[in-house]
Amino acid sequence: MFNGRPNNTKKMSPFLIPTTLLLIILTLLGCGNDDNVLAPKEAQEALLAAPSNAAYVLCKHAEGWIGPSGGTIEIPECAKAVFPIGALNKDVYITMDVEIDYDNSKIHYIFGPHGTSFNQPVRLEMPWEILKNYDGPLQLWYLEDNLEWVLVQNAIIEKTNKLCTVYVNHFSEYYFPRR
Image (cartoon, rainbow, N blue to C red):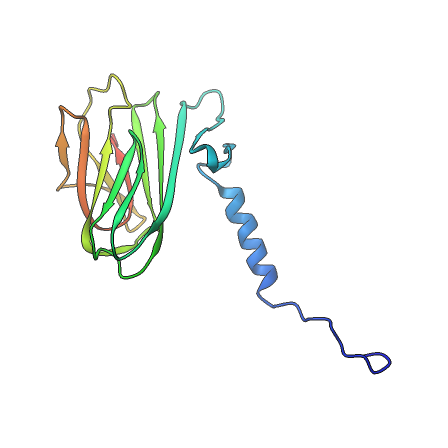
């Protein structure tokens, strides 16, 4: 540019600023609502700080790549997703979050990426034994089209093992029990 030297400066990509802002927003949203402070994911378990009148909530997380050859993602004693061979056409980064509300005897299961479709049914195992003295209704609910909670009709409830199993053709959010 000056004195016959080539210009080594590069133009900034028009997508850099919006992408950076999106990453900051997603980081701030984290797990739970705005009142929560999340510990690092490496711990695989985080206690959420909530207002004093809120219930005690424990959030657990697992993630990993699953491809056409199948596989399993699991949070021990909390949730498991078993992918048969051929369920996915390509490698997909699967996430699983479990929020346990001990005070209100509720468990919120979040499988992602939300809406991911499968060629073969994927088995989801969602135990409720972590709610030690729960004796309420044994019902599993899922979030349909991000609009309303619907009772899962094909859930297999094993009262002895305190395990709910469901075969799904896409990912959603699940709640046990939703009263």
